[in-house]
Amino acid sequence: MAFEIIESCVNCYACEPLCPNRAIYQASPHFLIDPDKCTECIGDFLDAQCASICPIEGAILDELGAPLNPIGSLTGISMELLAQYQAALEATYQAAVAAKTA
Image (cartoon, rainbow, N blue to C red; front, side, top):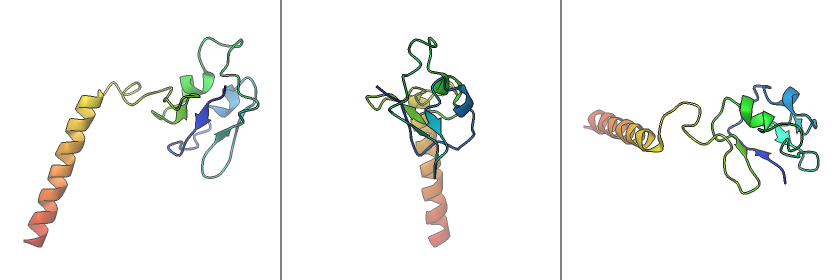
């Protein structure tokens, strides 16, 4: 039972001092969690302290690989709305590329 910090971590240092077990450490290219030390804050706090402070959605995963802060949980942007924005952005990009090559 341990959490995992993935590539989307921006090394903001917010989580490291909050870990009650000192399981989070600086590494390259991003912070990591020592699985032998991580207790998921069980017995210390109701919520995982690393996830409670992390400003990046999806940067910390549980033991099943699910993000503790899923996309939209911090920004309030739903997956559907995010998909619409991404589609509109891609369409704008494709139109710009087509106009440039025409």
